[in-house]
Amino acid sequence: MKITFSSLLLGLLFITSCQEDPKLRALAQEKEVQKKEVIFKNISNGWNFSVQPNNETSRSLTNTWGEWRVLLNELAQKPKSSLGAFQQKAKTLSKRANDINNNVPIEFNIPEIKSRINALCTKINAINLYIHLNQIPAAKIVKLVQEVNTEISSLQFQFEEINRKSQIKIEDGESDMLKMLDTIRAIPNNSNAKIIK
Image (cartoon, rainbow, N blue to C red; front, side, top):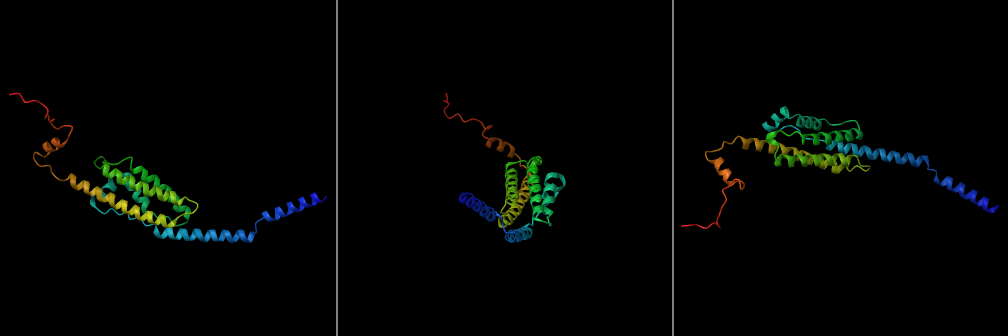
């Protein structure tokens, strides 16, 4: 009888200790909502992408290169409603950033541009990663937004640099000299060959 009473008392004690206090749960939920509001406010204040083309080459590329134009348009549109809107925007930006790597115009399909595009994609993918974490690091996201702006400026500068270099005229004999500098086409040096007199 004592064992039954003890086990009943222990079971009752266990059941009552497992129940949460509704006031504590409501307080915890309120703190979580306030924390998410602060995160939303910080991300909203720092979500400013500079997408205006800063040179003529970049402006002309927005007309001819559809993926680049779509990415810049996506970057220009800032979510306003909730943290979920920022998460959806980050997911869309990640997809758009990866799309520009697939269809680079021929004159810009060189390692200098590809590496800058990959750096830009990496930063945007990092924003997408961080914004989908349970504990969202708002400061890291704001810093990454600034780094994306730097990468976009660098990419636009490289576009202009390539365009400027392509407009330089080749002088007479320069193409022959470049062929001679090319180790595959250069005339082999036979220093070991015997000279017969």
